[in-house]
Length: 584
Image (cartoon, rainbow, N blue to C red):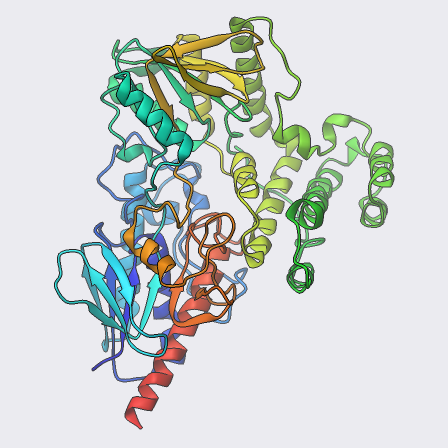
């Protein structure tokens, strides 16, 4: 029988793996044929999240020129570079366009079909439009992949899990809120992919509490306003009368920072500088392990500061008092109070200094006398963010963005570092397009979007949901509907996907945060003793090697591309060796 490879998940990650298999096969796989089985109920390319059958009102949160599925010479990998068009090049769009997700789905389908065309004729791809239910089989033998609606399993020499965001069972708090909603005839919408959520129960004109101010909230806002017939006339929103009134709050109490609206010019910061491969290897080799806050975060702070000040000194020297080379030497040697003294001397304006704590807690200690005062304050905050993120005189922010990408590319090698970093990265580097924040302002002025501030707490009492927070002491709002505007946490224990639950029961190891443990070198699943499974791999947000996404900006080193290449090469080498043994 020909060698058999099963890839569970045919979205961007599975498509990227297929592209890397096609790129590496001429070097590594000269055997007599291979069958690749893609298992996904959704069409290959876009998968569930980027499928073409969703509302055209939903956008990507990246410029079209900043989206690619193809490698370049900045990706540190062993396989060959196979360049290809970015989204804007393929679609003949203005690079600054925020494309809709339907178009991105078509781009991903193009990438999938190109990968198919680049495979040799003796490699065949089969798509199974269904779900994988479980994987069985001995460590040293062929695996069995059981599919929904199929009596006999697929037999596989190797299995790769490339599934993306997953549905999850409710945690204890969500389960209690759901039970309360059923008892009191309320509406409770738990964490979910917003495009898949049934929003029909949210009544026109009625207050709706929304917990979460990130990208899931932006989708919710769009679907409940323009999606219900409203429209924008410049900076004014013209309602249809079918919209509910959204009361939104979160831990930070503010939306994610706007996408930066100008291009890079000049020299890029030479990254990594303080957090590179050597530092990662040192952290991984510590016998007692490491603590993120104690051991890793100081290096992250130093790296992001370096990226910020490199840009400030080289692009805006009039706002500094020394040459970059002199400051860099002092910055590298200084720590704690010495570093603060060096910054005060070289960067006179405190507004030009990077304060990550203040960025992460923008409303810390902020109090408003009334709910209306908070609305004025948050509108001013959003307007200031829009102004800054579209003003190249603040291009040190873009330096920090590049620093964040570099740091993420290094941190994926450490395994599970907890959820905080991923949220912080998204808040600073993966926020909404500027036009979406302008829409928030228009909706706020129209009275359809009301801000609740930081540390929003939700309780269920007196037959309703109640939300309050310290930003406006003594203020609370009640509603008969509550929406959790965020994706479910990617934990194995609560995943509704039976495949992951079965893998966990079969011995696949789980981190304290509930992620699948994988070998950072090639994505092989690890067991409780740390042994890599010879025939099972996993890549994606439910693993402890999760990356910012399956696609990325051109020329930023794409950690997902590096992972795809390493896994593809390991798979092809294994299959080649197996084919050689069979021939012998």
